[in-house]
Length: 281
Image (cartoon, rainbow, N blue to C red; front, side, top):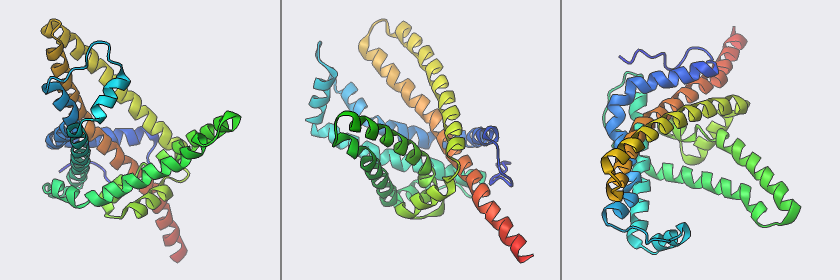
């Protein structure tokens, strides 16, 4: 058994939400590592193609020129598209497996379930992107002081919107709702918790950045020693380390998403249940 109090029986503090996230992470890491690794590798398909095909940018090539060259390559476009779809599938499978593990349910078939939910996942992504475009578009259509004001307003709107829809994909996967319904439910659950959720996400991000920085520094040192200036070897080593770090970090994202959603449900729906019980007593 997972032996994790999920869902929690009471409202959690910020520290308790993070602690629950790490507990979910520790319990599910090993059984989710393969799925997480596949998701990270899928996201790196285009980079791996560029690396192993020997397509190095010529000396003096700017980043913009390199980007234009990549955009003219149909193979890279196809790999980016396939990689994005596969990444979405495997990341969704990781979260579904984590939910099954902590709920003491049978594990298996998560990839198939994620594939079946893929149209809804894509629809959710499209709606979120369109919402972001609506927020920032007015700033691009104006100029001068008005553009600055609209840009600041867009920053506030996007920040609030990010927090408001942060539970949408978790709701979509765990409750089987559609894209629009998932956004609506996430918006309702997160209402009134903007600053609290911002603190939780910020602390989690700082922890991950620190871990990535330390790991990348150690890996860079080892690559420099072993590679002895060989650009191809150092680059390949960096890709391997990046995949390993991504695979280790992915289950933490899922654990955090599940912990946050469970706490919000207790805060919103637990309070509603208590009120209904009191009203009928």
